[in-house]
Image (cartoon, rainbow, N blue to C red):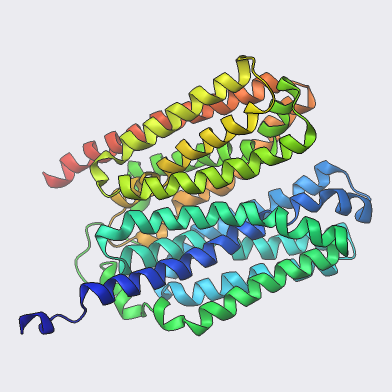
Length: 416
């Protein structure tokens, strides 16, 4: 029968795609998990090392600055060597950094370990999206991006829930060593299923257009594509939104609406879980790439409106987590379409490099946003923090449509 002539049946293709998406999602969860293992332990670390919150914040800044540099560079390495070895090195570095934090005897040792952690964190987006874009069926890419976003959100949600109880029961050192053990266990799982993650160098070169006439010339020519820098700017502002929500917005909203401390702590978890649920819906909506900018615009438009309600309306404290949940859900719906914006702006011979540079905007945004919004918090400008969140979400709408506009105008001379 002719159906036997095909190398893979639809069922086996679905199975292999599901395995790959699950393994990449698991690795991505550990990346986000590792970003948030230190911040919940700041009260313990402050006493242990006799340092200020500003100095502890600088540890996270080092982490994200290093991650930014590595993210941009690792895209080139992924395009050259393939994604699998780079992924293994990244997971190993995150585990090593967590063990280093646990054994640190001085503040400076924390900074050194943050460098190691930043190196590990920087490889994930170029690796993950190269594997997805090269191995997952195009009709399932929206779902792949959806799972990727969901696992990232769940990794963020898991970190404080994991390290804080262990720190209370035992110590902060045991908590951080346990976080390192989690990263190593995931590395061993991925090693056991390493055949699913295989994409040999020849396949990468063929898939990325190396060795045959390429749409663009040299290794760095993709940097001349305006849409790449528009995507970079989009992710910079997206990171600012995430940073504000993770660090300041719940506390600011708590001050504005007299929310009990326990309820303030729930806001971030509600936001992240709702965001994960929104990404499930977003994965189905992203099946039609032509509408991705409209979905992004609608999602962040509603999120901005909800932030303004949070800033200026009067309502019972119990509704504050509900509003955070609604904001997380609509932002999550926009997530898979957000990733498709980048894919549609990526030349076929530069996947790892483009994703490395574009997602470096995430790290820069997460490194800089606390400096701006932290000052507003220090001066008690709680309404300004929430309004600022709404403004940044508004910028995301303009950025999404700008990416599309720039891409379309770039296509005209290219086709000519």
